Image (cartoon, rainbow, N blue to C red; front, side, top):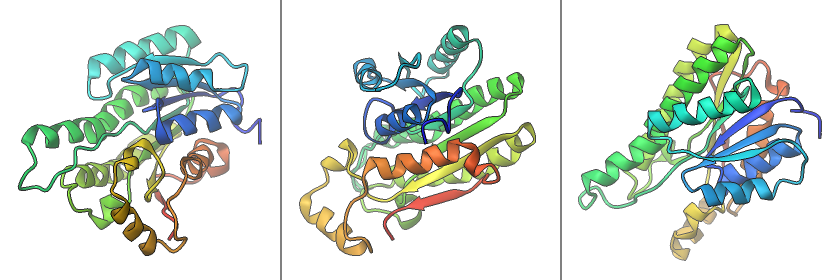
Length: 246
């Protein structure tokens, strides 16, 4: 497995924790050089320090909801490596759960700005760099099963992730002619800092509805992301892969 992504430069958002951190680890395991970005630089640094490979990985601070922040990081990456990434993983995401009748408008905006607009901004800026460099590549967006099922208290998060799926299909059509593939992963309930705050009785209910009767592990999402990043998925484009335990 170790050479599957060797020579590739991978860029991972939300790399400071959860799915983003484990994805960084697996991409490095498979030979990629990893640029781990997070709005929490200490967390991104911790991710890089945990990588057991000799590649020239770096951590950078970035706010996906800010186009200025993204362009600054893109410049820094291309200056350091003399090329843009050929693997881009959009896993930055936040929740601000509440019933719609109680949800402040600011909490709706915050979630949409990070989860949906943030993904759009990264696709736009990094996609442009990849197209101009003519190197092809793979972009993977992280959606969520609640984009399809809905979930009480997530009238902001659920549509933000549904938008990510719809956007994936559109951008895949636009980038395909440049040999840049764009796909989405649709995780079910995964053991991450984001799900730690879920009450136990809700977790029990979710587990009873899952065919495998358990939460997923971040590694189980990251393995699919690594597959989509590699040439093993060379004819998979514009699709969403559910990883939910059934």
